[in-house]
Length: 294
Image (tube, rainbow, N blue to C red):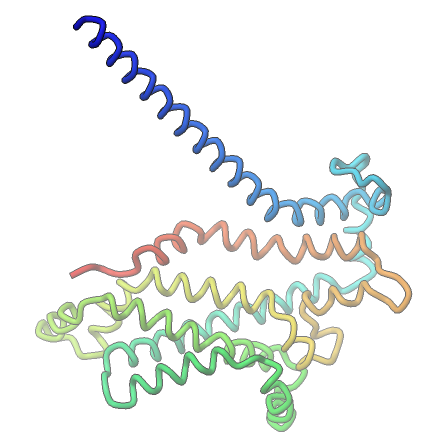
């Protein structure tokens, strides 16, 4: 009997040890896979930075992962020989204007779709989603003609309006989702206490939708910052270029200034990355919650 009990205990210990090893192996495999995915995502940015600092080894074989020497000549060239600072300012203006315009319109449109139910509300929502699926190439020619007639062609405000027009459908739908999760009872209580419909919206509903505003603002800003196709089509003068278009100027007919292009790419990526780091906490909160549960 004692032998049987001892054997059972040994089997239990062995089973627990085997389960622990299996769990450890699974954790190690998951960690290794996560590191691999992170490396695949991060390496292009690392190589962009290395290529901008170590211009001498850019075309060496085998390539050097760690730069042998560090030089800031490429950064000096892009700021002294090209109007990169002007392009960066134009990009910030367009992205900021796009973000502000999208946020203001999406708040009102999303609230209307969420609160004012009717026969056409569902059809209008479907139309919004359908418009998001249309490629920019489909309407860029009519947009070009309209902007020429309105005097918006080759202007930063015109580019911001065009960017916002393509971002608005998704931004509106996002805001509608946030407003849907806010109980209407809160607005009704505010109106009973003496608020008007607009007063209840601005004093009660809108503060609860702040996480949604952060998501829409961030999405609009980053999209406006990165946009290339419309900027290349609707802006003709080099002084009005945004930096995404300016990057193409580093490529000539017979050569490409890779070191300068990589340096300009680093300059282009840093403000957007800094903006994302600042709002990261609020962005995660907006994506996961975004409202008060009733």
